[in-house]
Length: 462
Ligand code: PMP
Image (cartoon, rainbow, N blue to C red; front, side, top):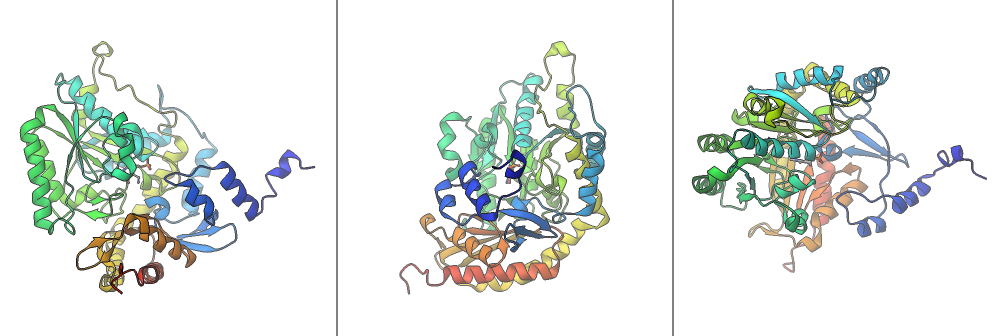
């Protein structure tokens, strides 16, 4: 008979696969598809590769959901956790502080755009956004301007899956079903030059929409939330240069707060420490997560300008307190590894290196744009989206039923590259430490997978 101890030791890959299907409900996944597929079960990671329980190696081509910085099993990061573990694994920020969370807050403020002065912790991107929204709302309430309670979001925005973050989400596939449950923001276009008649037209349309809205409604708008410079889940759509600055200036002139959701773009991913730096913008509120710990542990933060903090700073009886917090807020293990991650990034000059690597990556990707079904390749730093189309001339997309993005990624996995599609957009978001050779290998696999998957998909034209 099996003892309790033995049960944990005997699982073969096949047994794990069976238990995975039996017990787990995976995120963002139609489980019916998943159950019918061969599951990928990761056992370990080394450098920018992950290894499954059969020992097969895969490039982590999407940085394990856009968060890996230094690769996997990084001695310096492991060590930081072990050292903190030997002191204390958990403490709360409720009524007390812990050492790593204080030191990390100091570093975040040092690295953040000038003018952000205070750090409020949480533990994932959605909650960092949730906090941003609640702070923006209460900021105006606390100042006695109670009518400013609406939000503006952008078409195809994604800010996470909690209720507030879903409310400012604007991707019908993910968000539509919940609409009756949610608050309703104003939605303006996000500039999508490929499908909106080029950069000038796309930016113009967005700015016109925003200005008209502000002229009419600014007295009731608390804030606009935006994914700065790259709209991630909406399809890796890159904002033309200067666009974010124009948004920021317009908002300032109408007395509306700017929330930048840097959850995906923060910590070097786009070639600057934070994407809003590309346009020299300091948001009023900035949400960060993902890369903050190099992907190691769940830590997130909302950074604010002093004027936001000030609006909450009052005698208790004035009822201006921000009543929000999570059990894992400022977790010391997470903050310790975040500190080690940021230190290592600076020692390795990683943000500067991303610029060089991005140049190399652009060169590697460039021949792909001649492919018959590659509509557009979009890139900012090490964030890449390749939009696949049925017809290059007309830009006709693949019907969603064809699941072209999924097909490409499944084939890529067989060839040793992990990534996930966003509809018809295939992403490549390698860990920031990826070498030129590793980028060569990843792009090679992706290019082959795109060619093979799209071959003969001309919709009856062939
Ligand atoms: N905001 C943006 C821009 C994101 O890309 C994501 C996640 N991809 C989130 C928020 C949500 O982050 P999390 O998954 O950590 O909740």
